[in-house]
Image (spheres, rainbow, N blue to C red):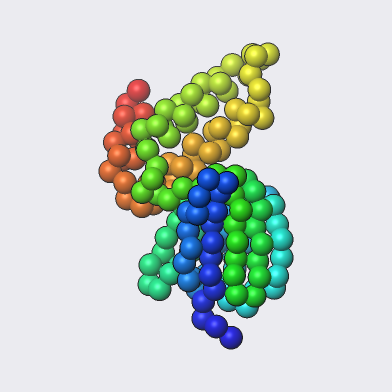
Length: 150
């Protein structure tokens, strides 16, 4: 059995990741699945979360939001509605989106708020900040510090 499999993360717009990896943790609806070489084939609906993977001695991650994942014997294909690498995340923009989403929840009786959409926006912003922070982004630390003092 091989020690690696090919991980592909693609969106409708582009390929985000294509790499030989030894393991991956993938957000699916209702939780996460762990995949290693030789995993049983499966098809699952994606959730929103941090997709982590090990390539050689590096542990890497990206966001993965919605879509589907197909696990095959030697390849995992993530067809995400949206995905981005930590280096592509604008932490200030993600923090602003988080702040906006949290403000929507400040008035739970507001009939003009689409609660499902607000929850999805909150979840996406949190995941983006989590992935960026894990990568050690200085911009994330500055954004988090600024929000702590407001």
